[in-house]
Amino acid sequence: MRIVKNTLPFLYFLSPLLVIAQGGAPPPTSFTGPGNIPSDITTPEDFIGVMQNILGWAFAFAMIIGVAMLIIAGVMYITSMGSDRTKTAVSIMIYAIVGIAVTGFAWAIVNVVQTIFFETPTDVT
Image (cartoon, rainbow, N blue to C red; front, side, top):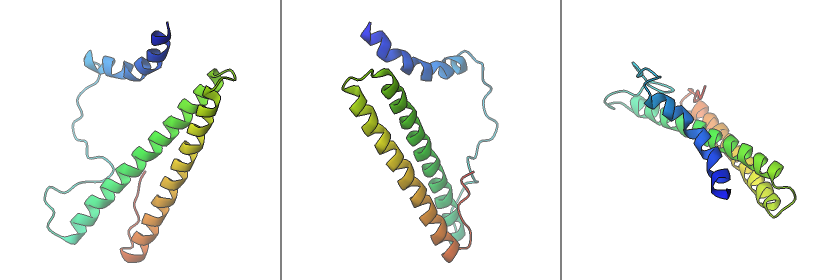
């Protein structure tokens, strides 16, 4: 029973993949992500554009992981019922909040440096 309880939340995350495997989602026509990646890097501006694109994806991924860990820790805390998992859940929450804060500060520092030197801040949205 414990195995079923532990694997059930994981299966919820896989359910969109099962829908896509059934042919429910059309293939994307053109996906470029947050910004366009040039096919060949010939100038420093192209390199800066690629780096901005990579940093934008990295910051977005880090924020998504941080929020997901915060949600998982919240569920662990709610379902712990005063056991030792409470301490684990609180420590995961603290680490997730620290990770989100560090990611936010890193994003701010990168934008300040880009604004000072290149006058083009990273647009993560």
